[in-house]
Figure 1 (cartoon, rainbow, N blue to C red):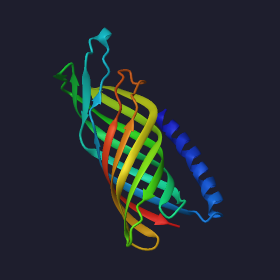
Figure 2: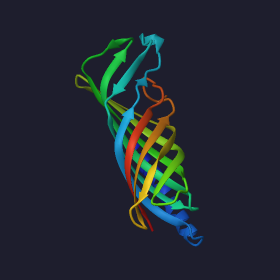
Figure 3: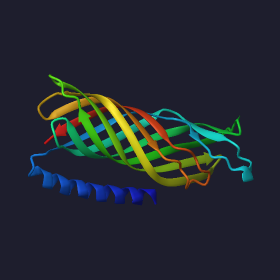
Figure 4: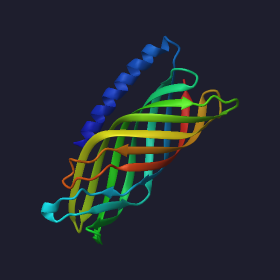
Length: 213
């Protein structure tokens, strides 16, 4: 179900972006594409208390994972760009704690598909190096998969998400650029999980490659 939803979001957003790009070419806006990847650190995912089943507190802790993304946008001014940026963040489960007790034998993973619209501002400096900052918002499709001794489960949810980023870009050629940056991303609480959790908060270090048309 989550994959169907993600394809629907991606298809609609991509079509809107293509129509916007075609329309803005007449206004001399400059379209670009970029890809990036890097390390993703996911903070503990805290379980909401359910007194009826004896759950007072709990959390899932995750190992470092990865994040990949695609950026399709237009540079509307020399320093300002707007882009649609789908991606994928993945982390494996490291530890499960329930009521302050470590529960052994549980394996799993947490996947997030962010579908964000970002606004990027590049700080005007002389030379090929340009610092940048940005903010974004959109939807995050999340899946939590668990395997407790062969008893498998999968939970899906879609929440509002937001992110912020900062980094530096280097113009290797007139059209090609490379970048290194930090990215923060958070969802809202996952209320549709059978055991609801708090927000998924991510920290990523990203290496990117961009091309201007």
